[in-house]
Length: 350
Image 1 (cartoon, helix red, strand yellow):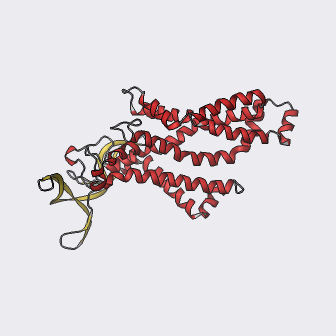
Image 2: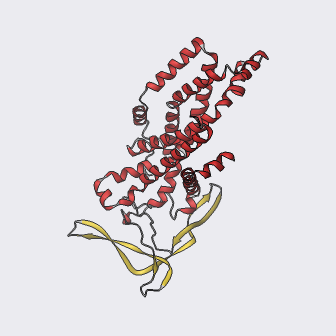
Image 3: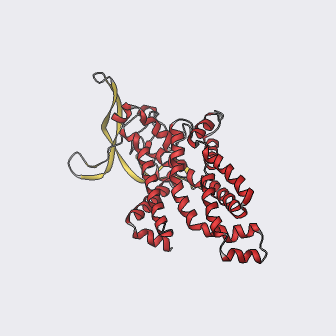
C-alpha cells in the first residue's frame, strides 16, 4: 500500500495508473460496454464514418441523445462512395439496452449492453471497417489480446529467468560459465526476426487462440535470457552476505538457500523489470499482427486492426481507423511512466 500511496503523489504515475485501470476495466467488460459483438458485421456500412450524436432537435430544443442512420451513395463526380444521413427517422440512444446475447465474465448470460439504439438503428462511435464491423467494439475485444500478452509472457519469462540466474550465480564456476554462455547465445538471436520466421512457418489452419498462445510462448522463450543475466549478477553479490553464509553453515540445501533466501532479495528489481517489460511485449504482438503474422482476421487485436489504416487513402479519409495505434501508444506510454515511478520508489539510488 505504501507503493500505491507514493505513486499517487507522482502526477504522471497517477495518471498512467488511472489510464491503465480504465483500459483493463474496458476490456474485461467489453461484452457489456460494446454495443455489438465481435462477430457483428454489416457489409452495407463498409467504412461508414462515426455516428453523429445529437442532443438538440430540429426546433432548437434540448432532446434525448439520438442519431441518424447512414445511407451509402455513389458520387460520380468524386468517383467514390459517400455516406449521407437518412433524416427521415431518429434513433434514440438507450442505456442498458437489449442486444446480442453474451455472458458476463463468461458466466452470467444476458442480453443487456451499456448503450444502444432503437431497433433498426445503427450506432458506430468510431465508424466501421472495410467489412462493416464496429471499430469501437473491436477495439475493446482486440485489447483483450494486446493488453494481456505481456502479463502471460511474464508468467513464463520471470520464473525461468529467476531460477536460471539464481542457480548460475550461486553455483559459480564451470556451471556458471556454461549457463551464461548459453544465455548469451539466446540473447544474440535477433528476436523480432526470429518471431517473424517462426510466425511465418506456423500452420495456416491454426485458430487465433492457438496462434496467440504460441506468440506468448515464443516471446517468453527469447526474453528470459537477459533477465537471467541480471539476476545472476545480483546473486553473485547477495550470496556473500552474512545471512546466506549462516544458512549454509546450518546445512540448508543449495536450492533452499537460492529460493528462500537469495531470490526474495531481488524482489524490487523484479517488480521494476516486470513493469518495464510489458510494453515491449505489447509492441511485439502488435508488430506481428500488423505484419499479418500474429492474430488473424476475423479475430481482433490492435495490431491487425491498425494494418487496415496503413493505406494512404484510409489515413486521409478514414482517420478513425488509426485509433488502435493511439491506444497502443497510450498503453505503452502509461506502462513506461508507471515503471519509471516504481523504479524511483523501490530503487532511489538506481
